Image 1 (cartoon, helix red, strand yellow):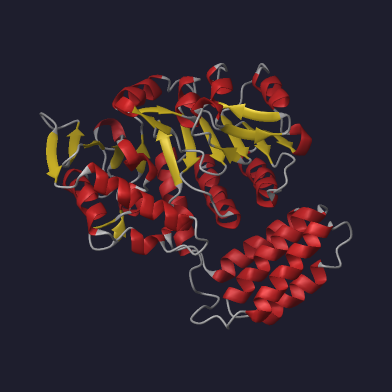
Image 2 (tube, rainbow, N blue to C red; image 1 turned 90 degrees about the vertical axis):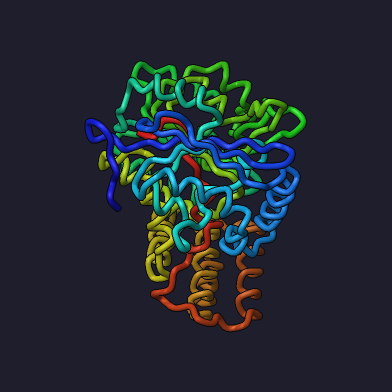
Length: 421
């Protein structure tokens, strides 16, 4: 990808701000070399955009993702088309959504004949231009050589890949402190942040919770209770990046005046320069692959916005052969943990079946069922997976070289908020 640059090798930045009124959507575009903001008026009522957002969000919860088709809606195309007028391929695009547009992956809407915007341009989101200015002003520490990783606290729904991610990220980034299981707690987090050497990156791999009645009680479920947005506002986070790999961590409450109350804004106001968050419940396996590529790019000195663009691009191209290799590697990494082994084997078996090899899937499950230490729930999950694979119709059109995660459902929930660098 050609990187369009401004002065001193920095990318050319385009700021795109939205405002939904009762009758139309207003799209403002600003660049450093433009004498004034450009304005595009799109005849699209706020009620219609809200209905569209509800429809798309409902589809995300069906378990049968086809987000690519939903994002081809011509109304979304009209909202995003102005971006391509102002931003050349490779320019850095800052999106400032409004109202329910905060809930939609505008960066995944096709442009220029079908290319998702995020594959044409690195895209960053900010709640407002004022928040962006605040984040950029805090760019004092660009170290990415230390990390604090908090993953898989005790839960009724263990996150096997979150634990695997923790170990893989630690290997990628170098010096890292990993807190998993009972150690993934608010108490241990505060102690680690109070250490003389603060981490440059703070990574959470845990379940998230959004409380629509009391948004400041939204947070991350840790071993000794929920780390809420209110808790975070009382902390000092002198970190370059906070990654929240949880369910819907980027969702915030929408109040009059578009005042977003939620985890993302709390993290930024607590001192983080940027946050990588998710817009909906993510798939664990695809997330594990995307984060491995994202952190590898960061470790190589690539700016965060471009690192995310590359990781999303790469995930969309991953083949069954590549993903199966990753799943097997993950299973070997956690071979001594029965619950994680069962969860990883279940995902690997489903992949094998989708790739057209149900016999290999059943052999894997049969072998995993003999793993010592499995709980009744683990055994039940493996047997249910085995039955579903046996009863399912043979996979059509899939093969070792076919892409697995090309639907935006897998790569588009991740958004970078705050500082692009």
